Amino acid sequence: MRVLVGGGTGFIGTALRQLLKAKGHEVTLVSRKPGPGRITWDELATSGLPRCDAAINLAGENILNPLRRWNEAFQKEVLSSRLETTDLLAKAITKAPQPPQTWILVTGVGVVLGRGGGAIGHMLLPFRLGLGGPIGSGQQFFPWIHIGDLAGILAHALEASHVQGILNGVAPASTTTNAEFAQALGTVLGRPAFIPLPSIVVQAVFGQERAIMLLEGQKVIPRRTLATGYQYSFPELGAALKEIVS
Image (cartoon, rainbow, N blue to C red; front, side, top):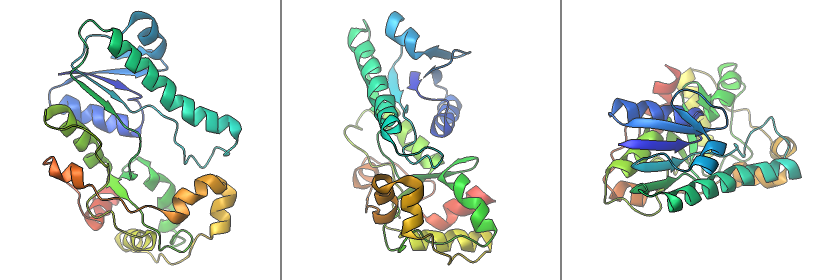
């Protein structure tokens, strides 16, 4: 298939692009900067949708970017990066003489674990130094997913005609608590993982609104994802972490 991927230059987009190409699909990216195999968002707005069988939008500023203060300007950037790109793609699809058969929007997933990026990139150094541990109480749920499975779920939704509706992008073992996650990562690295990151520090770094996501967590079960027939490559946390840090 010819697949158009919005925001496909980041961590998730790179993994998805590699998987789709390995499966024989042709991928065109929509990004802010021009380049081979890409069109820009401006070109999409002015020239319309290139011919494609499916469109996927991954675009969106990372809401938990620890290097950005949670002020009004960044809040607007987080919203606009998702809403404006989705609106652009939706309008282009509506106007296309041959609209794509499949339209996938990625709006919320678990903590994405993988080599060379994602959440694990910020965790490895303190954990390798023996300074890792749970966030706050550690009793909050910590939904996670391996990058290979997130890309796999998207490819599955793309290729399987019976897949419709909302799929939770989390692993089946996502009833893990934050403390259990910290312990598992420490075990894989052969390091202790008992130094907690106090709630007050999390609030100071991320701001109170964003800190809620890390300190309160959410219990998420991928029932519909499993019901579609998707087979996880990394359903268990220990195996996922071993593959990432090996």
